[in-house]
Length: 293
Image (cartoon, rainbow, N blue to C red; front, side, top):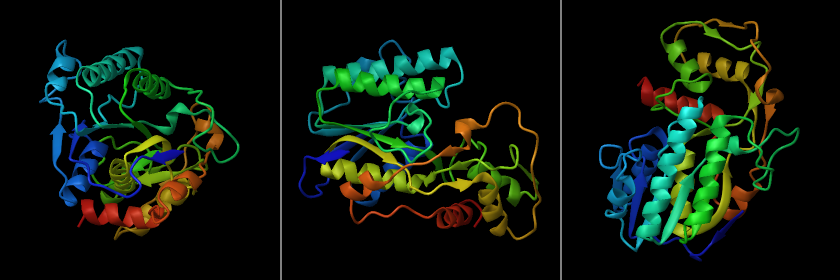
């Protein structure tokens, strides 16, 4: 749950976004600038978090009144070497924040820190990650909690989609691009597993609201609605001008998350009563328009 230190929304004096060149970081920067907030957008060109002097270089850019958004990560984490590099990057950020304390810190994490459950999860769900990617995000959260003295908020998005996503992973982003090329969409199994997907714009909006309210605590960014991958493929095909085939395929290995991963969005509604998550169909249509106008 989130607790707001600002009783009403107040624009932060300046927001430093570490990881501004990425998919989520770039969306957060766009959202902040839309409301005229001063933003220091940092990418690896300005601060390489794997460099030996990264903490000093980052600390030199921070001011006491800043809000700091930590987005930078190498993802998805698939190897032990990637996990090590991500820990090094997180260490550079928390060391910089110890050298140059700021007014507020927001860490953009992931729902991958949680285990699997047969019911919708809340922010109180057990953090028992079953992957290196989840282990990275949990370690990162623990590092920020242990080392950062500023008020800290942890935003944990589930599967994020949007027009500018560079990963093109299995799901809405790759389905949309294949359909627009006229290529068949091949599902894992019959696409029966059900997952929650959140648009990158909603993640950026929640980050913006957390910054304005100077919130502390944890919040999942998840709509509360699960949809099968076959249904997502059908939605995507319905947005393209020509028919595209959708086919199943034999599974290789177990179905991820036992085919079901759902969330209870009550904490979002409690923290921001006027916020509404974008429905998947509307989000897919927006991404389609943005990428293929």
